[in-house]
Image (tube, rainbow, N blue to C red):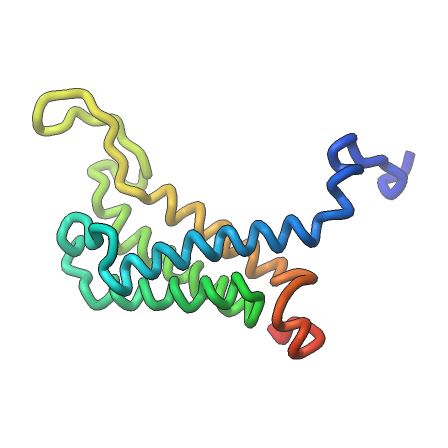
Length: 161
């Protein structure tokens, strides 16, 4: 059997026709998460900044919040989607190496199982896994683009980037 003649699995056959809708859902859910994270940083909501402004990066954290907020809107609405995804990817690189990785005594591991100062045995994480995951997701969105359901396709009839 040739590669083009392969049949999709049971779920692939059922769900394949909804791939564009799933991509829209994926994009929008990711955008909502990033948007809420950006709002938290930009407007210092919900207990942010945790740890009283990590590493003294006040202005950089504020800028990251605004980048996340605006880029999430671009990704969610599908307007200049690749530009928004690129902005998120760059922000996540800076966030990981500028903040999260520095919080780890055994760089670059996102999770550690050390003995904390109080002598107990606790799970300690510096949050780097979220930045890594968001970098990967933004990269995938940047490569694939917004898909079928975007403002770009309504306004420009194609993806301009």
